[in-house]
Length: 252
Ligand SMILES: C[S@@+](CC[C@H](N)C(=O)[O-])C[C@H]1O[C@@H](n2cnc3c(N)ncnc32)[C@H](O)[C@@H]1O
Image (cartoon, rainbow, N blue to C red):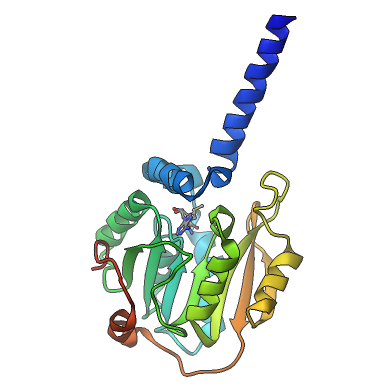
């Protein structure tokens, strides 16, 4: 009987560890654990994810550029950039003449990102910053586009992070984010489509569209209410000057 109980306790413990560390990537253990786990996986992240660049170009960079046409030189902020998936597919797109600032809380994910930016000689298209998504140092309306893929559910305060993204987007600017399709494994962390729509409407986002994308995630596109002149990449220096406390370690 004792052996049976011990066996059951070991099984439950192993399941809990698997769920807390692997399945939910530390999100129920707090921000530090999430970032520490991403630091730990950083060198293997691209191998684990096996991104299909052709699909990413077809389903991310092309539609993004189509939606903001005729602007070809937007200033883009990619929140939780990881190993620079979005900056690189933008920089590799021949139509793109803008600039992407990729920010992430994990130093080692950024180190991987930086290697790829340098190898591809994309420094003029991409800057990388180690920052938390919940407190962006940029002025209101600083970017033409804000993206945040596969990341909101790992943040301790996703509403605050989304509000920051909406704040730094210019009126009329484009937001691209994602929601996880299967909400069973991360209760309270993953948002349904209805919840995401409600959150975006509270932030005065309009024309909200949810598009099936990958097995695990849907894309969410939205525009910030209002209109304003495009910011454009040649305003990058002004944006840096107006920003408060921008760490320079990953800034080219
Ligand atoms: C699943 S990865 C997605 C990376 C990238 N967007 C992509 O599509 O490959 C989640 C990323 O979110 C970052 N992250 C988690 N919490 C964060 C926070 N509070 N602020 C900034 N980045 C955060 C992690 O370090 C990790 O790089």
